[in-house]
Length: 174
Image (tube, rainbow, N blue to C red):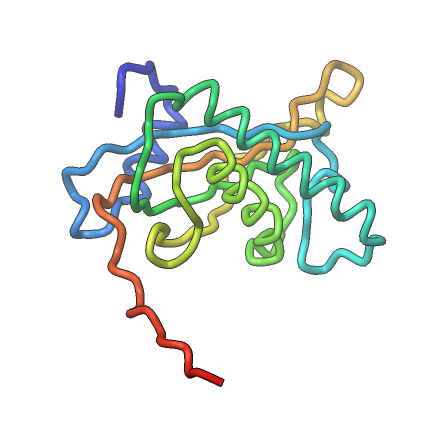
């Protein structure tokens, strides 16, 4: 970790989610991406039945929030290959199917690429993202006050050089 004070929750996150074996001594960063007021409508879900315009607006919001988080917190970090654990922080402690929130995390990962952290989000440059459920933000108790935002905490581990790509395919002449 690089020069930032960690909260108890962040320390627990680092201890709980170990990097892949080949990256045991690699650099790791925590990045929190917050987007929108914390309510179920702020999250993209595989179960969504919204119209495409509303879906696109939410996707762009998460993507932009992640891009700005990278530019603000990890401005000088450029990785070729990384492992990402995405920890979802909902406002309450209700049961949720974590895999349903993959569209939210996909938008966040696209924002990491937009922000310059990774060159691409294909298999050569990215392992994961692995989804986890984190501690609730507690927005339901503080709804009268300024509620916390919907949040995803990313644990990013540097895996070194990108994997080699497939060989270039020769086009058959017509």
